[in-house]
Image 1 (cartoon, rainbow, N blue to C red):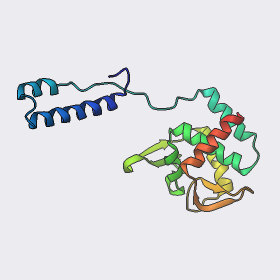
Image 2: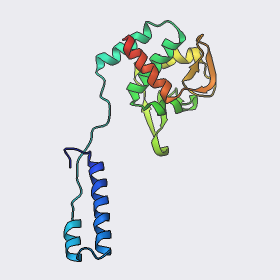
Image 3: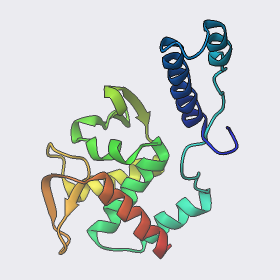
Image 4: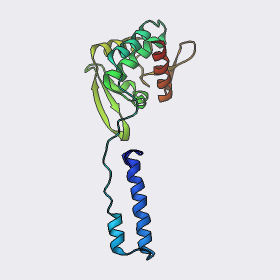
Length: 178
């Protein structure tokens, strides 16, 4: 079964098969001995690698270079966002939930709220701190989302968080340009 299915799918199929065998036994169409022998299927163990792939250092550098070459506000924001995503290992959803309160300037750290209400701390490296400082000089230090959406003319939309899909689009666009 491992040749055609992921381990979780194969185990779901085995579970359904065990259920069908049990119903067959309950209906009296098979003996208890046959049922127990047939239902003694061992679960399938295995691991599946997560979707996607790890970016190489040169690819991340090319993304950042593309942002640096963009003199607009969006280039500065995207550079800070990319530095934080790769420097702190954030998911797109985690970037969207970051607020100004989550950045502790004195300790140079971010408090990240992840899946299932888990929290963790990420300390920023110098490059990420510099990129974030450049972004905050434009954004300002007022409360709200750390990364704001922008209008087409480049003006900030205060209080409006970016979406995970917007971050995906930004990364895909920057990757094509890079």
